[in-house]
Amino acid sequence: MAIITVASNGERIHVEDGETILSGLYKAGFAYTVGCRRGGCGVCKIDVTEGSITHNRPVADSVITPEELSDGTCLSCRAVPDQDVTIRMRDSSLRLINPLLRQINDKARERAEAGSTAPKEL
Ligand code: FES
Image 1 (cartoon, rainbow, N blue to C red):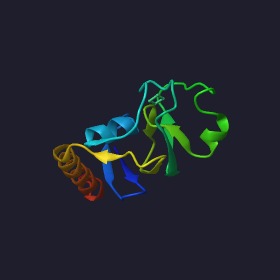
Image 2: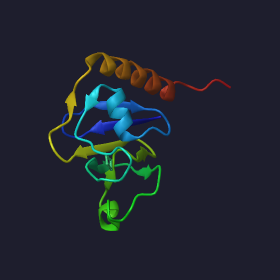
Image 3: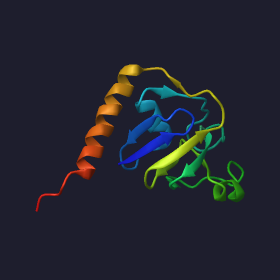
Image 4: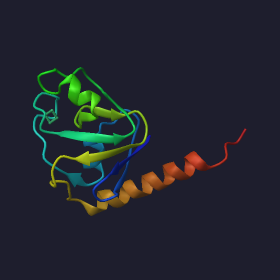
């Protein structure tokens, strides 16, 4: 699991292993501007300012350039956090659309964080 921190508002979102940033945001009750959701349009670009991601499928240089990748830009619909990450949205379209999902995600994050700091039983 990983925690996504949204730089603009401090939201902390729990994602399961292998889950994309876009999926994690939606499952936590947030929505923002997206297009194809398949790595083909580039509308969902965001900046990863801390941590690292891996795109779960190859992405075309015409959608995201090598320079953008090296600067921390990623496609949120294909980006899977390798570890905890901090992201910056490209516009102000991130909005909470389902507070109940956010509460559920908050509980999952709290449980995951408690589990990761709890002493391991031998
Ligand atoms: S929504 Fe089209 S590349 Fe992500």
